[in-house]
Length: 247
Image (cartoon, rainbow, N blue to C red; front, side, top):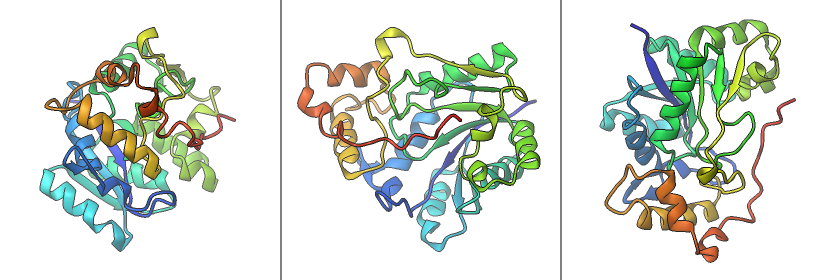
């Protein structure tokens, strides 16, 4: 049976907000909240945290152990090799690539992306090729064999830092599919990601409202909590997102 598993790239040495994945949201580390939300995705067979060999990342390893999920330690710079190593070590056939700065990721959005991958026959299915969902719902799905092919084809440090960039920069090699948000969830400028102290303020406020009593509350609930509250949305609206160029 093919195993579909989410990988979460996470480390403590973020340049903008060091230690962000262990900062508290809704009474628990942000990374723990993300793991809990991913556990609600019906098509996932598990979750593996892909962290680094840096000693600073031991708290992440300890958290994975406490939560009873997989963990893999690899290169801090070569994230492609780290994710591929995690997939090989944990017998993952289909990688659902996520990053630890998405603690409010919606399980339904992840499920929709997986189902699109299964139905399409594409090599790479994501909701970030043309961004329509809020930043922080980012989901990419591809086979381990595709990532292994990428690793064989390129030694460019940029490709290895950004994992899947080589895939979507080479549509002549791989079949690509973008999953667009429905109209009610289309808000590509909204930051529901954790990269700065101001992002943390917004995520904590949303956790106290949209997620109160329901850690599985989805994107619709989050958007409803923001509706009519411009001051809340403004908490991080000034933050410039670090986009990975498509070409």
